[in-house]
Image (cartoon, rainbow, N blue to C red; front, side):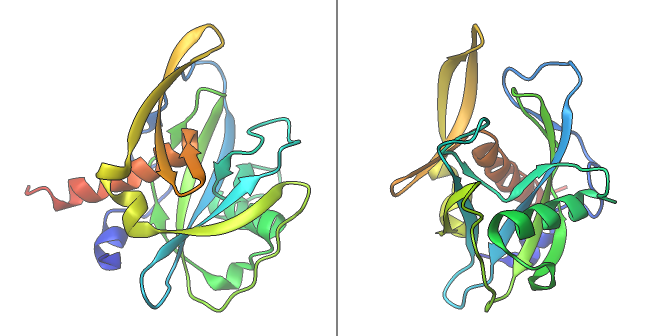
Length: 197
């Protein structure tokens, strides 16, 4: 995995390109949010740090997700939101995160417009899940997640309409929805970078 190529495929500023619009996304007012796409620089191969949300949450219970959430009044930027949420959800301190860049804004069928903030994490660092929000923290190989051969398309009924979405099954984890869509967004950004001008 060429991390320099990955970095060069990212935007320098948030939301500086076209948005990725999820199937079923509405034009109604949406909620601003940001997630940290944390790439861990392990010696053998880079991995992605992901969480499994607790089952009792009102939104996205049990789903695999990046650390992140709604923009709050005190957040000066999407980076602030992503780092704050990562600290609150998994105890990750911002000093361990090098911001690499941004992916296009991701608009969801559930009414969010998410800014994905890609960051590099160099071990060692500590994590501590907030038991109210996070049931599990795990890592998956970056190369596996970005391989188009591992991307699946599914559909299901949602609020009376058929919604199409990506999934990236990994072991016992079923990564789908916005998390999988953002992973696919990075794969596509890197593919565009590789295309000749």
